[in-house]
Image 1 (cartoon, rainbow, N blue to C red):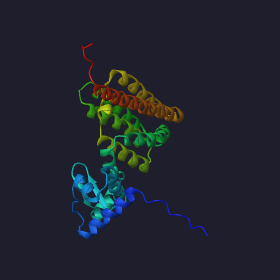
Image 2 (image 1 turned 180 degrees about the horizontal axis):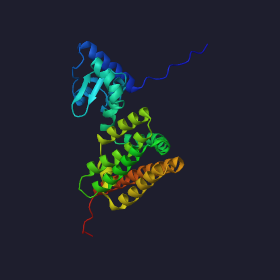
Image 3 (image 1 turned 90 degrees about the vertical axis):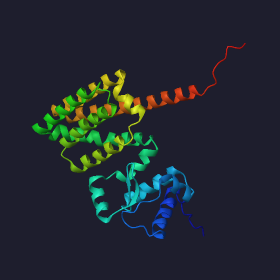
Image 4 (image 1 turned 180 degrees about the vertical axis):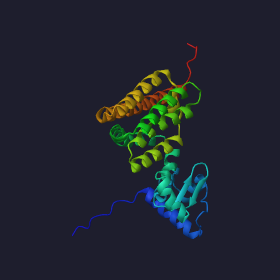
Length: 261
């Protein structure tokens, strides 16, 4: 009789078990801080990527809390419940800080969420919602050219969130807020260029205008199509910027040509 084999345990699962054992062995209490990431990875004999994935897993279970720039802590019971409500995606901060590729995972899920948000906003937006969306769009245009890429990115996020608010779906809004919080923690050089390059600002502004116009006109199909088209442009442009940057980095490492025959 053949006994089915258990699937191999993932490294991050094993590291999560090691972290739980460390908390027990050191008798760490809620609010106590774990060792610094570099030290902890060395102690456990694992990569920092695997460590971050394990911390994110335990964070999603309400056992650990990762604070941006502040380390990882054993979660307070009250903080666990509050985090689940106010920052549903906070446990994944270590992943985003360590691997910019997770930006593209966010963009993939935004396709599903923002298409729905734009659809429902077109159907449900009140006069106050419409005024807020128009104001967010104007603020986004005003933020351009101020030599503040991070501020421009925040204005962009505020515009998208104003549409999510107009959907009047609280769960969708909370998840989208969490996604934008994650993106703001890791605004990469390529993402900054996305908002400051003249070649991308014009199409981005036009795409945002189309989204706004469709929502304000109460046209759900056009609103969803505009949201999806915008996100596809962002995804493709970021990929191109990253590839160009990597190509330049490789070229800079090539040996320089000499004038000798």
